[in-house]
Image (cartoon, rainbow, N blue to C red):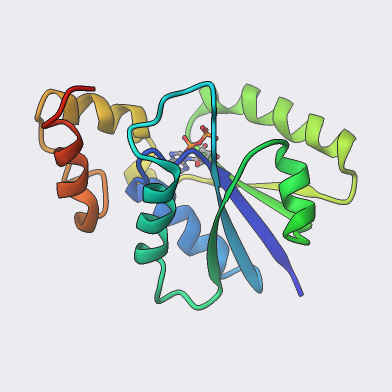
Length: 161
Ligand code: ADP
């Protein structure tokens, strides 16, 4: 059984993330989306909300599961019995950081490999922080995130952040 984890902050999930989930889920028996609980950053959405949103969006996929995690990514991969970490690459600016992360993880967990999916060209410019910035100025975010969560994001900016 081939199990992969796709880790990220997903704050919020974008169409670019969803595209990676859809494509990688086809390559493995089971894909576990790992939602990072990052104590250093105050997220726009709570961990529970981020998990729930991704669960709702992926409920028809069959082999996708969503879990929250904290701590080392490789520990999470081991817990999930995963041998693959999936990451998305948008542009050359992602490359250096991602390579360093993948190589470090390989040293501490030689049984786990990182695979990179290049972004769908349609979404290569897209990031959660761009979405947040546009939403904070009440701009139109419908081209960037699944329509099911547009209102939820807008709602967050009705109160102060
Ligand atoms: P992190 O904080 O770990 O970078 P993100 O939620 O921003 O978490 O991203 C999770 C993963 O998804 C990363 O591998 C990132 O490169 C990838 N990713 C983010 N946006 C896109 C996109 N538009 N297209 C493809 N991959 C993306």
